[in-house]
Image (cartoon, rainbow over all chains, first blue to last red; front, side, top):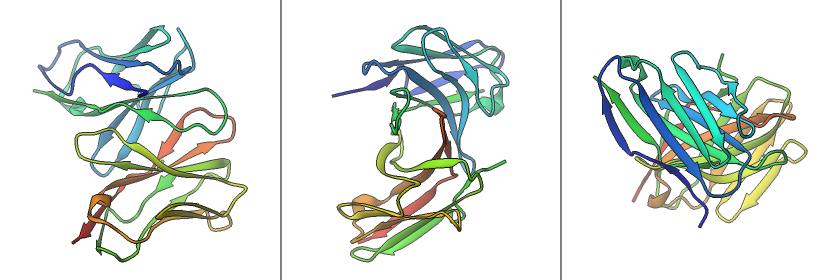
Length: 113
Length: 112
């Protein structure tokens, strides 16, 4: 059964902390994505990666960075967490090209206090 | 700038009846459209898709219709079941791109 695994389901962090959200996929997908989901705003793209060591900014990259050192792992980093980064974070992956949809992880609910 | 719009935040339907979820888009470069379903505390799961060269795609109880001239697509669920209660996201992909643009979602409640 193919999977996208996010390391934490729930996370509570303090303002100013550096936060790492990890995502691992076992499908040998080239593309990986980080979205956040907020009520009334849908899913908004933070960063994505075409392949290892490649990254592109999405629609809302401010306050975030990413790392893709290995094909199966895509990390989202909140450099200095703020309360407005409280959200559901969703990782997804897909094969490059073609009409392939995403496979999503179960999400990480991050609360910044 | 929301390029994919779902103007109905919520929809309630009786079990056994038809559910129709709507989605509008603004970018004429979108060539592939998908619907995802999301339960609370879970990631979205793929439901059905349609290429811009088609106007209809059917998969069991789920049918997606695409009206390119109106830049509108809809998802029909017939008959609706209580297990269909979830948030449904419409998504679109631009030609040659790898990322998807998502709508804001519609929460469907199917009443037994």
